[in-house]
Length: 99
Image 1: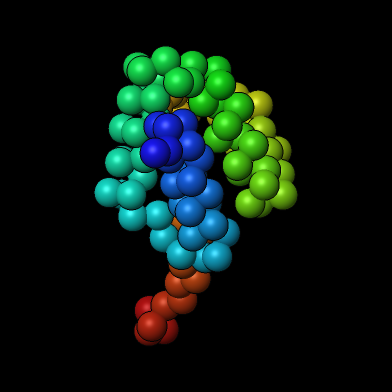
Image 2: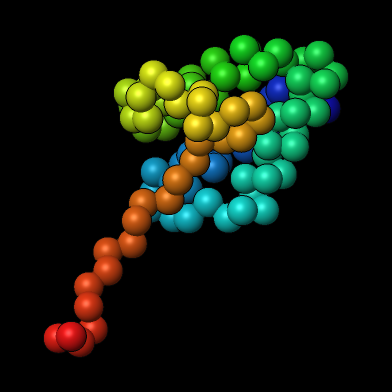
């Protein structure tokens, strides 16, 4: 049976791969993962610090850069534990009328 930490990592990879491929991050998927992350910390499988390292490592694996390179060194301030710093790409929008 997978540990909570292994399940967190598997789901992080899946979520970041969706985003990297241009898909959206459904809120339910993100929120379940945040809950699982918190459970892993409460059960002692991860600490908040090791969870941040794991999130950054998976982000680096999928996107080719760490979170600080993408969001700045203070990304923790905008996304406190257990919030995941995930964003879908902004959809290209163009006006449908000349107004």
